[in-house]
Length: 356
Image (tube, rainbow, N blue to C red; front, side, top):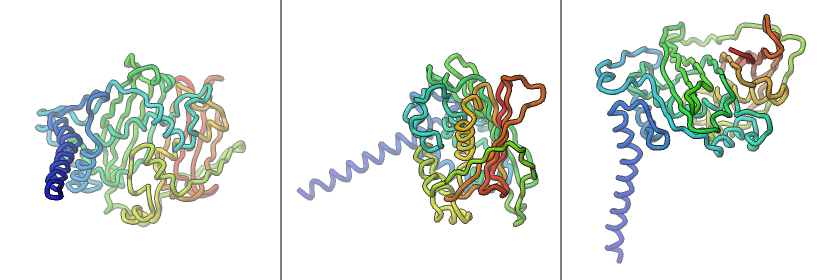
């Protein structure tokens, strides 16, 4: 009996390995080989396992802070891998609930009356596309160590429009430019509804730091004076915040998970995800100012100044300003987030509500 079971177990294991390789590696490889840049979400898009392999390959072949030139011949053989589009997407209610639970809104937030889908949620939908962008052969920077320095998000209509039917996502590289600390790249993200009308857009700027130009001198944000009517909220950031984020988004960046893995990457403690910190700020502002503070059409602009470490506490401060020449339908909020009242902020931003 034993001599019969052993060959059977080997055959089963080999079959499973071949199936997994074909499903998660080879089929995704064929998509990239063909230069496919437009995908049907309900059929086939590159797997996370294959993208992890491409990510590893890219970080081993490219150095941080250096701008590489893409092979234009490879682009003519396939598609332009500076832009990826996924159509026929549909909103997954369980994913939305996990996001709301992990990002400070609460598990039952989607059922709340008069509340739109969270402002930052569409970026969550782009995590696979962003990985595809930085892993593409035409991407001219190393995917390792890309740091978010600023972002601008705009809603043209309520994000709840995505609940009404299939929608499309598009991510594209806009511009590379040299700065004092390395190379910056602008990546544009856009969501369109079932009628192909814009719902939400974002321009996110990432920095590939040239480690030769990094000094021990700390970079400080410009000083500013808070107005008299400023509101302040202290939030606790538990040690497992990064794990909850990873479970909700499937983004298992070791820099944000455990102190040990963060130290292996040269950081003294785990760092909060930028998407989490921005979303947490907007969630707290909405709780105190009401849904009108983030109601479409609106724009959110954020600049990041230094890491926010976990676990710990953070202070979110926000206040309302009346924009020049504004009407009652226009509102302007400023906000910042830091580890204490007087510390250099992790981020500073503003919300502009009204026609853009």
